Length: 123
Length: 123
DNA sequence: AATATTTTTTAGAATGATTCTAAAAAATAG
DNA sequence: CTATTTTTTAGAATCATTCTAAAAAATATT
Image (cartoon, rainbow over all chains, first blue to last red; front, side, top):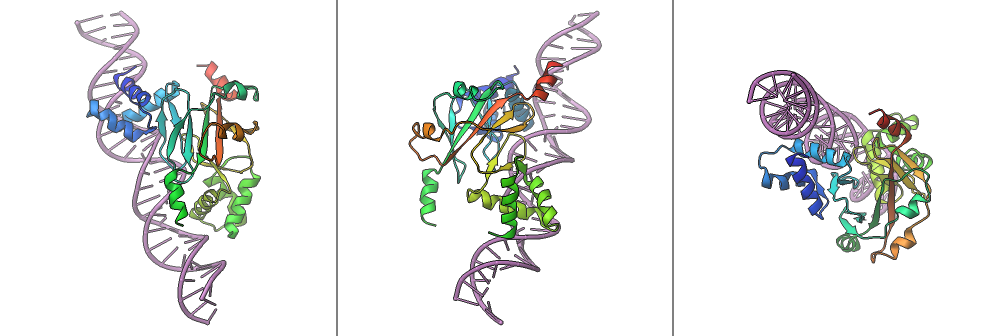
């Protein structure tokens, strides 16, 4: 584990904000002001390939990186706002229904956030 | 509903292939050889905003568009291959666990497809 | 501890999907 | 028919991400 890889993993694991690569870059520069953006992408890809972080893609937004710890997401259908939500683990239940081994699953619940709810009323 | 919108909706609703915008473009040109790519994007966005089609984002690949009909997805962790899978509807079960109204949900199961399985063994 | 090998970093260019722009065309309303 | 709104169009612009090829750093080998 390289120093950048280590630090990036820490940043993501500690964050509850589903950071973009750009945000990780900004955060990392607090500790390493000269680091290159490509290094952030390299390390994010390596961490992800190694299964040490999650990647969350919400349509139309840059990929976001997330801690591994089991949890699911609420996504606003309008603005893409992303919230953590703790739901019961479905692995058992799902595995029963398919015959290939499931490594993990990604569950996003779609809703309309308060802000968009308000906006929608004035249209 | 414009003629392009109509036709694009038909293409996606009939397809089981999670088409990219580019693929929809190619398909649409069978019927309308002069249509512009921007028109495809315009209509896909409008259809999606109207909740008439789904958008499936797999990290690192162009967005894919999918019929609305309830079904879930298997995604290969290595190559991104996407397969339909019919799982029990979880809406009730999930709605009990959150206090905002759930419009829909998006469930992706991660696995390793046969091809990637084979490749992995030779490494 | 010097040399070779492999991995990582770097800056910047390149790519590729998608959006934007502003004008033309088409559809709809008055 | 004329005015207004919506859609289409082509091409430029944007933006996230990957690629490139060289430099630096880390690791292994003698």
